[in-house]
Length: 296
Image (cartoon, rainbow, N blue to C red; front, side):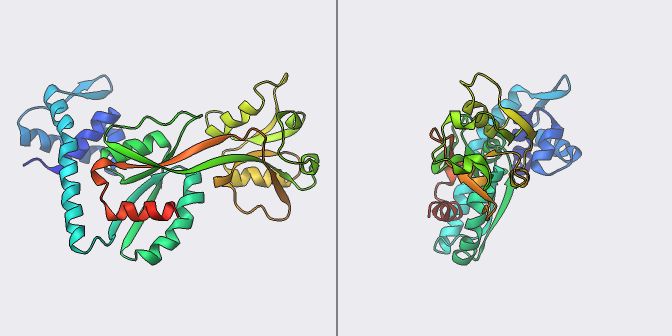
C-alpha cells in the first residue's frame, strides 16, 4: 500500500522542484523527504524522480502517481467528513488556515474569539503566506483554507481542485497627522490634492505600492517618497511625526487614535479578498464554520 505521507511529499517535490523547498513547505528536513520518496519508490517498484540540474523532475511513473494523487486525497477527506458527521457535524480538530498578513489582522483575528465560543472543539492554526503560496499549500494538502487577494485587480490563478468564495472588498485611504494640510480638505481627495506632499509607502513589488503608483500615473512629476516601509504600523508611526502621509488599506489599519485621521480617495484603490479550499472539502464542518464567521 502506498504511504500517504510519501505521496504528499512527492506532490510537493513535483510542484516546487527541489527536495529542500518541499521540506520547508512540509515542515521536515530534506533528508526526511528523501527517505519518504525512497520508500514510495520501493512501494511502487520504479523510480519516481530523476535529477535535473540542481533540482529534480518526475519520471513518467512519478507523473502518473502525482496525477492520481488528488483522487486519493479527496477520498481521505470524504472519510474524515463521514467520521465528523457521526458527531452531528460538530466542527472539531485542527483547521490549518493560510492568509496574507492584513487578512490575518483584519479578518481572521476578530473571528478567532467568536469561533472559540461557538466551536470550542475546533482549533484554528494560522500561517502567514502570500496568495500564490497559500493557494499552492491548500492544493497540496498542507493547508485546509486560504485567504487570498487579487493582485493589481487580477485574481490569483486558481487550481482546478479548488473553489473560492468572495469575503471582502478592501480599500485604501490616505492617512495623515491631524495637523497636516490635507486634513483640512473636504473628502474625498482627488489625485491633484496629493501632489507636493511627502510620503511613506510600501516597497516596490507589493500590492499597496502598485496602488500608490497608480495614484500618480498621470502626474507630471514623481511623488516625493521619503520612506519605504513594509510594516503598516511602522508607516503610521512615521505619519504621526507629521512629516509624511501614507496610503493604508483598511484591513491593515489599527484604530488611529486622536493624532491621526484618514481621508477617502475619489478613485479608491481596491482589492477583492476570497477564501479558497479544496472542492473535495466542501462539506467540511470546520471550513463551513470558519466561512460562516468570516461572512458574519
